[in-house]
Length: 286
Image (cartoon, rainbow, N blue to C red; front, side):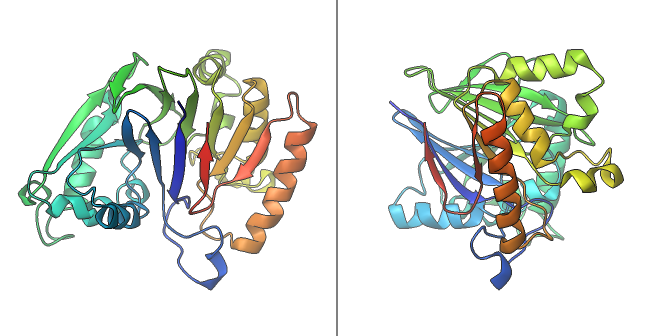
């Protein structure tokens, strides 16, 4: 038994198509997670559209789809109106959201996927769309055969991350795409809770929007640096770290340089976590 993760969108804030971002990709957050018992999707950024097109090609459009959304910001929802499965009669799409941000996510999704921003209201599409709350206190819920726990993230307006665990193998991945680690540095309780939520995971996918030199001008914006993410993985003794939510102004060459720095830091850190830069098309198996 194993978990397989495929990255369909890795960019933060806004999609960045173009020749300078071809290798890492320009779509906003969307990660597909599959295992022997089913499939779910993390976030509904613009990467959700090509994921849906791939499902069409594979004949899986009518299969039930579970989408876990972290928060209400547009870069994590812009793909939802363009999900091909929404136009399939009888298809079931369930959007799972941590309870403390459910109302905000539902309102934002309806606004983006309905007039005047989109021609057909979300609930008038042929598929059946429902929004379901996840316990904000981290109580596990089974979704698509995986144990899912919400993790409170530090991000303006409220956000969550998710811990996904395969009950058969015990392997787990943690997804925290928008999380300001600096905001937890002075709060031992928050840092400890975060470490506890990550402990024992095989993989951490974490926000790495900023360089350390950029952070002082962006405190309170809800994002972290690659260096903070590496330290978190080392402190939590997680063997693999994927850096995610790339800054929209960073092209492929800039991300190559950042990758070199982060990998060197990982090799020197306690436990030497393997550090990978997320890119569209990347597949990781746990």
